[in-house]
Image 1: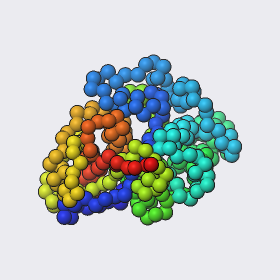
Image 2: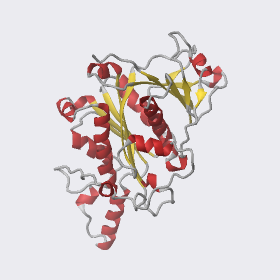
Image 3: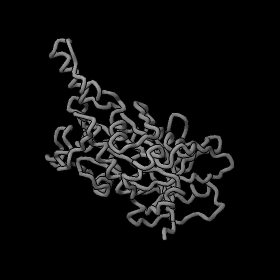
Image 4: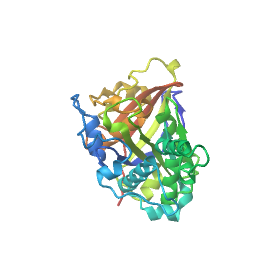
Length: 337
């Protein structure tokens, strides 16, 4: 997001909304099942043996038709999963794929990655060694880049706006959201799809199977664009970067907070913080790479709105290397007549 610093304790309106979310994991393609699993208060967040299979073949395991592109003979699993998650976010946001084809330069993709298509990279290394370095597979070589998940998704849906991939920062979730918001505020595009696609193999540290394979995408767009296309379930979104010279923040980074009553016009940011109530939403954080937690928690909070939780706004404070980011979600009441 374009960072907005608190100067006179006022939080400016962002004019941005979250309009949809897509996810594919060992739990399937249901965002409700995904968030319910993460919010379990019990410690039994275990998967069945079927769900906890070796990663790389999630689409087949879930019985989903494999995405295919005419220009590609092969796709890495992270690219396939990203395309499936993208299809889910389009459905959730109510965006028709034909709209993208008719207006390709007004849509953008901002993805994060830690390892990229390392499954393909490993296959290329094995092929190179097997052939004693005399040649490599051009097909595999062309799919080894860190940006392949975003690139193949853009190709698959005809997106010709900015296509950005970020890798390897501790604050990657916040960085992705800031860059997406910056693109929107520059009016280069009216819609940005922001998220990630990751896959872990058994050669990496063992963790619960849920995040061995996961693709997750949010749809951010201009409020006026969302109203124009009569989108439903919109959630206003903004970020405040807390300037610690203003005093100690009254909410703890890492927690999730709610305000039960929508503040009256003119309520300042500090007053809103005083009304905040810490939620008992439990997130099994060892299942999520730390850098992506803000993206996941935003989804949990947005999903809580759509589950008719009795709140008017949510706060998500996150400590970053540059201070504390406070992301705010507010229920957006719109007439779509």
